Amino acid sequence: MSASSAAPASADRAPESQALAPPRRERTWLAQVGAGVLGLARTGAELYSIFVRTLYYIGFGRTEKGAIAQQMYEIGNKSLFFLTVVMGFLGMILVYQAGLQNLRILPDLTMLGGTFLELLVRDLAASIGALMLATRVGAGIAAEIGSMVVTEQVDALKMSAADPIDYLVKPRFIASVIMTTVLIVWSAGIATISGVATGYAIFGLSPQTFLNLSLVDVGDLTVGLSKCVAYGAAIPIVSAHSGLTTHGGSEGVGWATTRAVVNSSLAVIILNMIISAIGFVLFP
Amino acid sequence: MSGPAQASSASEPSFLHGMGASLLEIAQTAGGMTMLGFKVLHRLITFKFDGLELLKNLERMGVRSIPIVIVTALFTGAIMVLQAAPIVQRFGAQGLLGWGAGFGTLREIAPLLTALMINGRVGANNTAELGTMVVTEQIDALRILAIDPIAFLVAPRSVAMVITLFISTVFADVLALLGAAYAGWGLLGVSPSLFYNGLTSGLLGISDVVNGLVKSIVFGILMALSSCQFGLGVTGGAPGVGRAVNATVVASAAGIFVLDYFVSFTLP
Image (tube, rainbow over all chains, first blue to last red; front, side, top):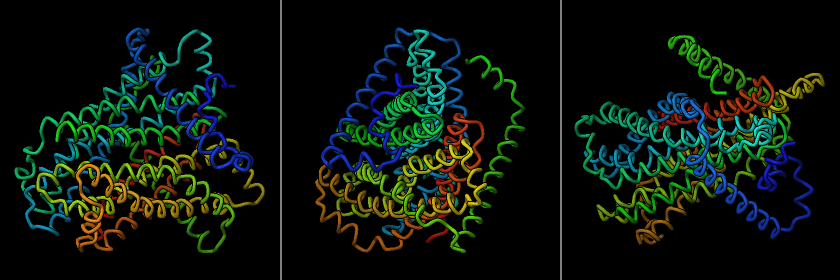
């Protein structure tokens, strides 16, 4: 039914949703590894293709009034409460655990705030925030596009000579890059406030001592912000790919959503590793 | 396509009304999860659950998640060291790297990230499956055949999910420390034996490991109940399944962080 849009990359995942006995028996171990590698390479090529086409349509595509604003509302405003709760608790957990461990070695907690802020700016605000957005936004995009594929709306778009990448992926991509950055800056602020409150309430650190920005330099800020942009770009591309390769009714939509969450979370973790390593080399 | 959606968001009820409605919804979900939890507990105590189904789910949830857990844990360990690297270099405290990466990994990062990944893979999948069964009326068919859906579907899945997350966390603890040790060796020139010494020099105790594992059990119970609750409450065909999966993943992720705080706070 949706065979045209169900690209071959999902072929290696198909056995997971169906009975698993027959194909497993026939394939040798080596063939399985080979099939896995081929599937991975094919998925990579498809992700690259979607990414390049999205970039092309940003330059030369059609402009639909309000589409980006609506996606920004969907991605941004609707994630605000969720992200605020998570990052508020994250700030409290981090300061509490770090303070507790710090006290085991030396009783001086003056550097706790500075180190916390440095870690927050360079890594944790962006990465934990993006992992949360990968679950919320990624699942949302995949479920929406997946339902469109299953109900043949994407095929209808193709019949009308409209590329679904231009209509569906491009607005989400632009909205996600902008809103991820905005939301992560916001969530870093929330985590800082809850961290200050925890430091004051539990360890008796005054906010002036805690808000020690001497360790945060340009390098940390650059790494943190480039992470925001990279995650904001990766999440919609990976989830749109999962959505567009949906096949097989309502169960297929569920599978696409699952795959979107797992793959965009993995993308965040792998990008984090790469950008952190580059940052470590460039800004020692 | 964008027109009507924007219009409806503009003419929505007032902010206060929306807040009250979402508060009631959260209360309803939490209540439903508690009730489901008691029902599952009742089936477990009276041994009225399907053992074969439990084994099948353990294979599907646990064994199939191993690749994700391996990748996540190795990368996480390396990231921990990358983040600690400037601090270690600033103070020249190579010997403390094992301790720093160790307590962060064992107490927080390994349980948290493993739970988030398993939530994405297993929790979402579980909701999708149960939701599909509800939409295609398979649950009603079970009831007609006098098979208790909780004993046959929900209880085995819940137990399997808790066991999966617990074992995955043990696995992730070890692998993340391995990743951290080798990343420290490659990036900072801290030999793995020095890393191991830092890990076992007495600053870290069994309580740190237990702390992380208790968290994994708590997260597992939360994920199991929320994914089953959202899955059984699906309405409205294929789009409904997608919405339910989305709602489960979000609710579990937020719940994991909230519970993480309370567990960290109550355990010494």
